[in-house]
Length: 71
Image 1 (cartoon, rainbow, N blue to C red):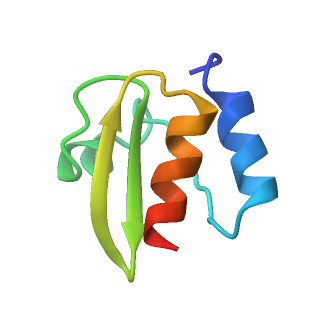
Image 2 (image 1 turned 90 degrees about the horizontal axis):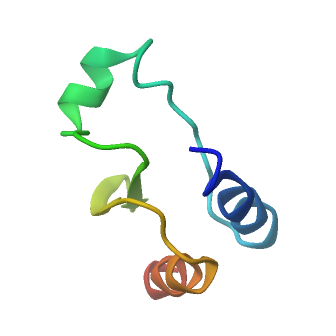
């Protein structure tokens, strides 16, 4: 999603979080495996496990706080 991309890129540059983008149209099996029903969907992993799923545009402050809570 073009609206959230700058926020995610900023967080990737300013935190230790690793960021991966997935084209759900080209990777429908992966999207289904993670229950993606809307775009954008953000999945947060900590310790190799998915710990949060967010659907829709989120503010930079919300995402930074969420990342920090698992750091």
